[in-house]
Image (cartoon, rainbow, N blue to C red; front, side, top):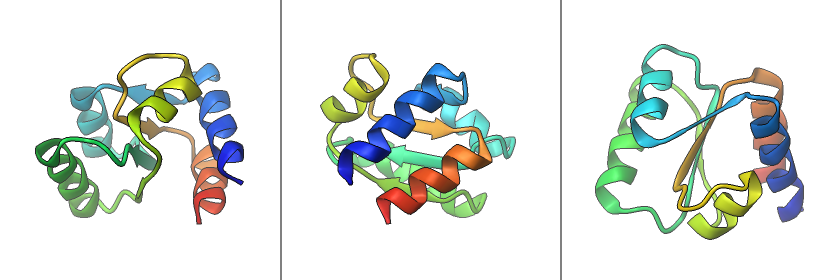
Length: 99
């Protein structure tokens, strides 16, 4: 089950339907482009608060997932603590896999 959602994140990333980096993700949340935000479980408390507050305010769903290493490996980049999914279909599938 766990690997399925990581595969979907990898597919979304390769399809160009993800945004990375705190500022880019915040911009996508504000502009309603982000359909789902996936946050690493070991993210810093200030960054986590900033992202979750933005998601709650703009009514963007978010999920706390595995640690940053696992998320980073899913997209082939290092040190990623959050990923925004920009596609409705990918977001719905990943949400169903994460529960």
